[in-house]
Amino acid sequence: MNRNYVAIIIGVISLGLFIFAVIFITPQTDYRHARISEEKYSEIIANRKESSKSLLQNLKFNDHKVYYAKKNNTWYYSIIENDQNAKNPRIKTYGDGPLNISFKDSQDINQETIANATPLVFIAYNDDYYYEYKLAITTLPIIQIEHEDEILKESDVNISFELFDNREKTIKRTTKTAGKIHIRGASTAIADKKSYRINLRYKSPGEHDRNANEPLLGMREDDDWILYSASIDDDKLRNNLCEKLWYSASQDNPNLEQATGVEAKWTEVIDNDEYKGLYALTTTIDEKTLGIKKNSYGNYSNYIIKKNYPWKEIIIDGIDNKEKYPDIEHAQYELKTSKIADKEEAENKIRTYLYKTFILKDVNYIKENTEIISLIDMSLFANMTMDYDKFAAENDETGDYKNTYLANLETNNGEKFVYIPWDFDATWGISWDYKPYHAPPNSQISDKSFISSTLRDNDSAYKQKETERYARLRNKQWSNEKLEQIINEQEKDIFKSGAYNRDYAAWHKKTDAENKNKNNNLDIFKTYAFKRLEYMDYWYGLREDEPEPLDENWLNSVAE
Image 1 (cartoon, rainbow, N blue to C red):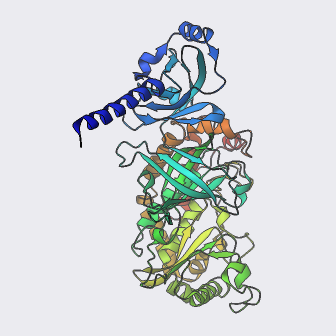
Image 2 (image 1 turned 30 degrees about the vertical axis):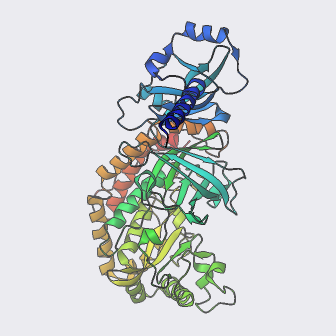
Image 3 (image 1 turned 180 degrees about the vertical axis):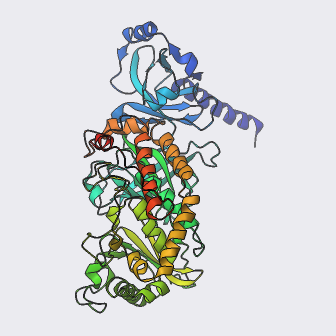
């Protein structure tokens, strides 16, 4: 190629980049130098007209994107962990021509400002116009989703998905992909602040629609994700705390190949230019979670059943009542696994297991076909967390239950049915009307409300195993030290990030929640939870003396 021709091309490109920089990018400054006095700030405004539209098209701090929610007129700055320049970021603005940016000198970026969710006020301006914005600062990752159609419960809507990962050593700082979304949940789906199920997608080179498996925030590679709203929990931590406690217990089960719980990380979400608040990004209970693999024909030999309601309806009249309940789906529970190698055989196994377990209460059959440690853990866990939402009415002595996965798995002891709980928002003292601390911490779940009572009443060896298992878990996975560690981590993410206060400001007029956590911490929850563990230790033989109950006046005051 002619050298002169190459030189001309390089010159044109350089000129184009120069023009772009002059028109759209203001020279970099930093936060310290962008701070000005109140008088100077007012003078800039007084000498210019207020623009009718935003002057900033994009904003970067330390060369990372700051996210804008137009409806809130707020930019959201996610601080990268252990970044020494995080509180004095380099600032770069992008707009319609050169722009200056100024913050009021009285505004510091510090831990108090962040935790209190105090927004910083700033202006972007040129020679003729100014536009004033707010800046929110968080220590959490940010998710931004955009879509043209309304998000529904019944069907998926196409979205663009972007996640900013603020972890210090992340491999991928920003994840961008297409996806599909729908509203998830039953009773919580009527709350204004919804939870969502997201399926990440991408186009292959042949323009085929494929699942996009991404290891979001250091969790496993997956295409299916949940954005959990915690809309009925004033303290926000219950679901994540329970997930972590169950995950650690299932990790300690020597009969399973892997843990049967999910992972979760807190984020803040912007949806179509509007701030939507604090959300936990979680994986789902599926074949990947439980290590269920396909055979050479692409089918599953094992499977997962999701139970939303009590089992009794399908089995009370016997296992052969297929006229009333012709298939699994009509029996009010969901066979989650598709492409089962032999679906008819699977359904017959399920019906037989439920009938012999709940109606016949066949002790030997239960012991032979159930992964017993998972059954023990389920019973202990539900009692410890006061998860009344798992069980049927107290006068129902079948041991029926709901909000649980029942998985047919290959274990180290052969093929067994394994119990896995889900849905933990109504735990640790939340009553049926979703008011916190309305049940005292010495409330004990009836022994008749779970099938473990059948074994406990008829098998002394099982009762001993239950006692030993509780002692083992309390020594490590459910110890006071472990519980406090998890609660402190949750407090750091939920409150010290400022996300709790931002979420409350966005939603407190729109939800059924009546109580804001006025202390901006989890001290009340800690007092309550540790007292619950004292009672658990007493009931399961780890202490001889009955605990002193919490002061009734204190309990009434925190339950108001």
